[in-house]
Image (cartoon, one colour):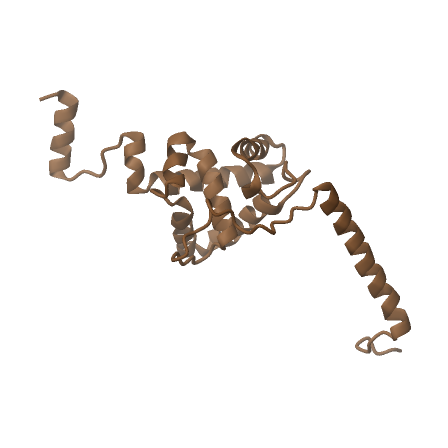
Length: 198
């Protein structure tokens, strides 16, 4: 009986190491040459990246950027403009939500990772989600929404629901939808005068 913790003899280990390294490099080089390898070497796109002073509790900077991109595609043009101008920060709000709900943190982070790095046939793209233009992101989200796979539809529903919740619960979003805000007694009287015209 041999000791399984003993290292392999060099004449056995070296060919396997070269074969593994050579095969991996050949595959990676082929994929990179054809543009099929999602590199992500550029880092987080600056327009979607968190500000340098923002401390995230659950989301990584990449997950923050991915969630911001999803929210911009889900909330419509006026909401996307407010997010892009940084008047509304749905990814920060989502980070705060999932920090309070740890059971949601794991699935959200995994779902954002899948959306960012997944490739066809699982996710209808070959590049990172944040590297796609708006039309490309819309195609990916539509593929998730219309998929026959429950997992993909659930991913879309969860990301869209959380995007809408954190965007439209922000006080800054009230102007986008025409909602005057929470009412106290004076606010109710003021709203009633605008409705009745008195």
